[in-house]
Structures are given as structure tokens and as C-alpha cells.
Image 1 (cartoon, rainbow, N blue to C red):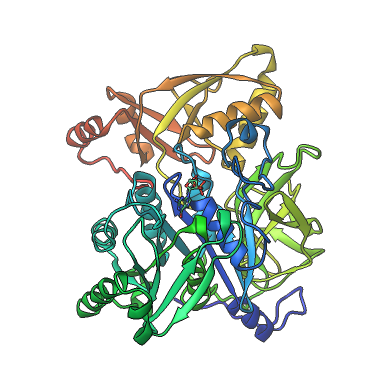
Image 2 (image 1 turned 90 degrees about the horizontal axis):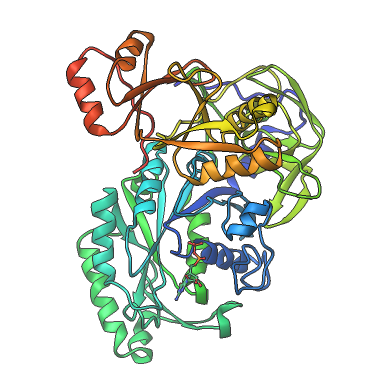
Length: 539
Ligand code: GDP
């Protein structure tokens, strides 16, 4: 792979060594988990350890915990779920750890998967009693597709759960990665005394702060003294540690970066125990922003001029302003407030004057940012999800992956007199990546088909169409669950096939929709020459 010449940034005074230094200080990550495994709690605990908040409960403010709620959308408030992606920049040991929020809910939406395109490593959080649950597996599937290194955190060790070794087996079986514990629990699940830090052999004993609102007290004991402090639980932990060592389950940085192994940590996030080691691992083990492939196959070094890729847009985050934020991950160069860039897709110039970072519900203006940072562009109207922003000569990142939708609905305006608002609203939601809007030859322009990975996306469509575009809609479920991309030659074959329908995306891409895998297999048997391409599978 050839590399784009770094050179001095075209528009900015940033020197290559300055960019290299700032990029090296950054870690950009996201937490993936099944709902209720403790993602919000762990995020808060990380923020607490990085001194970003004084007490846990600040960032997400779930029911019962005092906090600053990320209640940007009325709907989010109504349903008590987090739809918006916040980015938490945490400062730890001279590094900036950007935690990109992956909105979690039983109905995952594409946004959740897309957030994973903006990070360099992920934390896979699992509940000690439940192991690798369905959504964790799906999200892991996307991480594997992206080649992201994975740090595994086994949470809720303060509650009765499974055996640690058994959980490791399950992680290995499901992910194919070798688990290499960095910390090991002293005391079984439900009787969490502390941690054996495997690298030093030290015992860290915890005393939980009342309510878990502040840091747990830590006492460190050298290996030789640990058995005295913890006569029952320590010998078992040591025995298991030896077993791990004998089977070669020790951290290997190259294997981790290549996705062949995953360092494992044990926590009780609610009590803030074991969390510091996770934050340290982000600094010590997770990769810094590195060169990124371009659409033309070359690699773009972090020291090139400013580039960023938009991975999410969010409207109405602040009900007082009804504004729109486009979130972009910086891939190279220095961002400076007021700089001029171009959107590669449209060729339009943009002056980046109003750029913000979002911390929970708090926003602040960004003057300067570096590779690995996520910036929110305010009211950048013509910017779409997936767009490359660049200074100097045009470069383009590959398009964001399209995750295979599994839910399909026909959409119609409730009020036929609002056809114009209906069309405009859908076009905007399509561009924002809220949902895919398809045109089916069977139904015509007036009855678009919406495709989503989770039902939540349809709820967002209804909410936005009603409140932002004043064109409430009616849905009709369609029975399809499987999609393949097809070419023009396959079009008539799909159209004539029972249990299948052909629909086109805005850019002309043809999708064949099938009711289920059996219909798909029967189509393949009937038309063995038809070319069918799979989208990125989740799970
Ligand atoms: P999310 O849906 O993954 O964001 O999960 P939350 O962070 O909201 O946590 C779900 C529930 O599990 C809440 O009631 C938390 O208080 C609880 N929880 C989270 N972490 C722990 C933990 O380490 N131990 C225990 N006992 N409960 C936890």
C-alpha cells in the first residue's frame, strides 16, 4: 500500500511532529455490550477515575442516579433510553481517551454499528452471570469485520455469577480470540475481594465507597503477603493464575492488535472496582490513531493535512435550538476553529467555525483537535453520514459499511396533502443515515420502503417526521428479513420470484429483499448465475 506524502498541512501551521505527538496521546474507543450489562455504569466509572466527574451518575443519569441526562430528544426522555451518541473525552496519565458512546437498547440501530467505524479499539463488556449475550455477539461481529482490537471486561463480579475460567472458555468459543487475563478475581463472583494483577503478581484489595459514588479504596499487597491478608481466596486465585500461565494465556500485544487475543479484566463497575486497570489498559495497550486506508487504496498517515469522516448526524439535540450536529472522527492533521475545508462528496467548501464537543448534555466549543478526536459540526447542513472532510487536495475514505437490515416497512404520509414535506423529510432522514429509503418498482415513488437493522429506527423516523417535518407517517410491515445487493441483470429475476422484491437505494444500488433464508436459497438454486452480494452481517 503506498502512502500519501505527509508534508506540511496545506492550510494549517501544524508541524508533522506536533501532529505525531498529539495523535500518540490519543485513544479512541467504544464500549459494546448487551443492554443492562453495565455500559453506562462502566462509562461513568471510567469518567470518575479520569477525574472527569466527581461522583458517578453524572454522565448518563439513569433513573435513581443523580445526573446530567443525555436527554437531547424528547423521545429519548419519554422512553428512558439513549439514542444519541455522546463522546466523552477523558484525560488520564497525559493521554486523551475518547469514549464514543454506542447507544444501547434491545432494538439496536445502525447508529450503534456505525459508531464502531470511528474507533480504534473496543471494550467488550459482559455480565459475569450472563456471558456473551445476543447483542454482544452482534456488535462483536462488526468489530471483527473492522479488525478492531478488543479489550474484554467481565462486569458485576460483586454478584453471584459463573466461574471465571468458564467465562473465558465462552469468550474464546464465540469470538475465536484467545482470552489473556490481565487482572484475575480474588474471590468468586458474588464474593469479590480484590484483584490479582497478573503482570506484577500483586494483590489489590478493595473497600467499596458507600453507594459506589466515589472511588473504592485500594490496598496493595505484594504477592508474598497476599495469602496472609486473604487466606481463603488468594490460594485459589494463584492456582488459576498458574493454570493460565501454563496454557499460555498471557497478554501478547501483537496478537491483541491483530485481533487474535483479547486482554481480560474483571470489574464491579457499580462499586468502581477494577476500573482503573481498564483505563490504564486503554492507555497502555489500545492503539493510538494510525494511518487509514483511502478509497483509492493508498494509506493516509495521521500527519497529512486535516481530514475527518462523518459517522453520525444528530438533530434536535438541544430542543431550544433545534440544531443539527454532524459528528466527525478526525483521521489526520490538526483541526483549528475557523479553518476552511471541503466536503469531498459535494466539493462544497465549509468553514468550521461552530464546532463542539459534547460531554453528557454539556457542550463546549472546540478550538483545536487532533487525530482520534471526535468533533460535532453545528448546522453543517449539506454534510452526510460517510462524507470525507479535507483541507488541501481532495482525498476520500472508503464509504462506511452498510449493515444488513432485517426490518422493512412501507411508509405513507398520514395526510396526503403533506406530500412535499413527506418527501423532503424522508430524503433528509436517508441522508442522515437514520434509515434507508428505498424505491420499489412494485409500489412506485409514492410508497417508499424503509429498511433498518432495528425497530428503534422506525420510531425515530416517526418522531422526526412528526416533529421536524410536520408530516406524520403510517407504517406497514413487510415480511422481508434478508437482503442481497444485485445488478441490473438480476433485476427481472428477483421481480418475478415469489417471496422476493426488488428495491433501489437513492444512489441506484439494487437490493433484492427476501422473506427468509429459505426463499433466498431457493432463489439461488433457481438462478445459479445471478450475482448476489452480502452486506455487512451483524452477528
Ligand atoms: P447498560 O444498559 O449496559 O448501560 O447498563 P447500566 O449501566 O444501566 O446497568 C444496568 C444495571 O446493572 C443497573 O441497575 C446498574 O446499577 C447495574 N450494574 C452495573 N454494573 C454493575 C456491577 O458491577 N455490579 C452490580 N451489582 N450491578 C451493576
